[in-house]
Length: 394
Image (tube, rainbow, N blue to C red; front, side, top):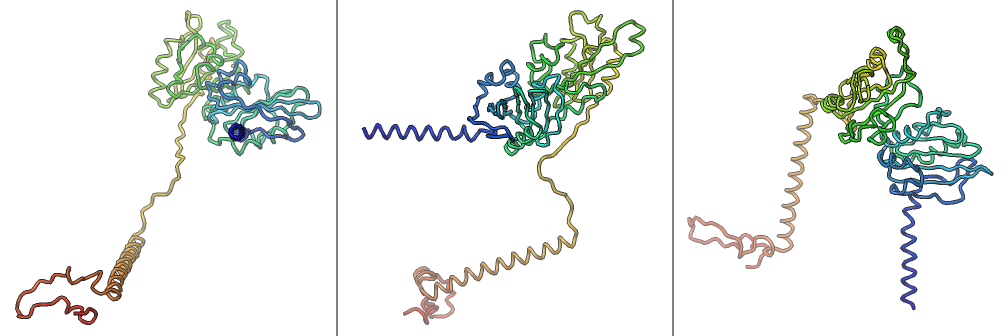
C-alpha cells in the first residue's frame, strides 16, 4: 500500500514539473488596461495551428511558425480574443502579417511598441519582433493604449533581428497602401500573384533562398492607350523576387519564358499568362494586369536594386602603431621577461638552498648520486663528503 502511494505521489510531482514549461512559455499577460483575463492561455503546437488560423494554417507553416497561443479577455460585458503566433524570425512574422492583413485594414494610431500594425473595427494586427498578434473583439475594440500595452508586454521576449529590406525596393508612386504581401513560399505566392498559380512547381525559386513581395498599383492612362482605344487597367500587380546572387537571378529570369508570356502583348500571349518583366542585379520585377508596354515600362523602370552589405560582428580600426609605441613596448616587454626570469631563478635557487640547509645530503646532491670527474694531477682522491664537511657527518 505504501509503495502504491509513493508511486502516485511521484507521478503527481512529475506531472507538476511537466506543466511548468508550458506556463513559462506563456507570453500573453493576464490584463491589458481595462481588459482582464480570468482563465489561462491555450497553448497550441504548430501541428494543430488550425485551431487558431483555420484554413490559413498551411500558409503560416510555410512562413515558419513554432507555436501559437490564445487568451480570452473581458471588459465588463465586452469580450476580446488575442491570438499570438510565434514565428521563426521577424521576416516570417512580417510575411504572416501582410498575408493575414485584410485589404480594408487601415493603419491605426501609432503603437510605439509594435513594429507593424493594422486594424479596422473589431480587429487589429500587431507585429513585435518575431511575434504576430491578432486581436478580435465583438463590440467595443481595444484602444490604442491597450494595444500598446499588449505590444509592450511581449517585447522583452521577442526576436529583435531586422526585418527584410525587400519592401524598400517597391516603387512608392501609385502603390496602394496596405496591398503589400511578403511571401516566402509557393503556397502564399499562388494566392498573392494569381498569374503564377497555374505553375505547380516552385517557379520563383524559394528553394534557393529567394524572397518575394507583391503590391498593387494604380496606373495612369497613357496617350497611346487612348489612341488605340484600349481601356487602361485600374490596377497593376507588381511582384519583386530577390535572390541571393545575380547569377541565380539571371538564370531564373531566363527561365520565366517557360511559364509566362514575358514582355509580350496580351493579345499574343496564347495560353500563357502575360507579364512584363525586368531584372536589376539580383532583383526580378514582374508586372501583371497591364496591356500597354509603355505603361509597364514606366513602373518597371523605377525598380533598382542596391545591395547593402552589413557586418554584424564587432569591429575595430586597423591602424599601425607609431615607432615610439613600438620601441617603448619592446623595452617594457623585454623588462617584463627579464624580471620573470630573475624571479624564476631566485625561486628555484632559493628552494634548492633551503632544501639543502634543512635536509643536507638527503634530497639534492646525495653522496651516492654525485659523480666528479678527476684529472689525477694530485695523488689524493677527491671525496664528495668534503663539499659538505660542515653540514654532513663524515
